Length: 426
Image 1 (tube, rainbow, N blue to C red):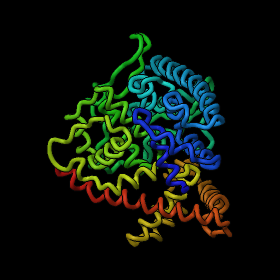
Image 2: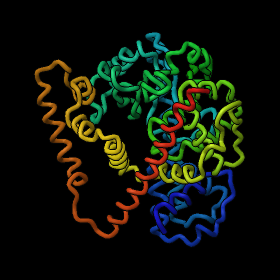
Image 3: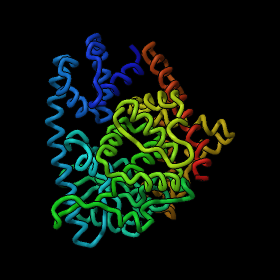
């Protein structure tokens, strides 16, 4: 049985409100269950598998069931740690008057999912106004939050290229905290539209908790748009199938202003990313009802083959994500005839970009040392991928599967890009 078959079986399992054929899973051997649980662990799906275990206990072999019970307990503890970290951030920022909103999973686990532990958090994402971003990051630094080693650039340089400050590690909970100053990844999409620059976005914030300790979050409508922009355009759907349960339970909460949502989606050139996201969600959560846009392309414009491709993209091996993304970028640049400039840009980024990667001022005379360091890192960390190596039969099979994933990624990319201009006309 192929990895793609396992991926689709896993998507069936996590769609916990849809009945499954238990007999399909009775035939899986230990190796197949190892693949399924590995994918679930990579993509933070173990709590949803735990929920499936409650509903269909005969679906899982005893060793897998025991691990899921253990992971469910651990996730409940992790949820308490995340809540404590959010309260810590609320107290720190309220002291100095910095407004912030907690993003995505922090809201979804509390307001949309049946129970918070079903929506695990890898880190804490918060959004602050752009003019408060560096101050917020420096405040965390002063309070003992340490910059995570793999993100060594300065917060000042992040303002020019990224959508967030360098991640920082909490001294109290050990969780990574990401201070965002943009909701959207892409600075060009929607003619540069950025929701957090609109005062109406901040006016729509919702607050949960006791009045004196309430945490602010983007409205359900803004959260839905953020989920889709983040997954479809920021990640090309490679950030996993939690998107499906996020959408399903957020929509089921009944709090979406659909007229506003489709207006914002068109303004951001995100209509087709939304249509594709909703089509895939409804495949696995058929009870989810999404009103069609009042005019222009609707759900019928999404090809079934594209839905299939997106499902497989979501469950790609997370350890191969960077290589797969690089393969996609290489194919796109080769097709457009600017592969050489793309390669040079990766080898020798601008001084400002280097300052976002390494602890060096863009005007520093030490900059050539960091260019040398970058070349060394690329040569040593990526050499096996770049120059190739002898492969076992299993590795060759995996390589063929990776090529198929890149084909799917290219198909989804092209479909979204082809329709972006059309969306802007509505």
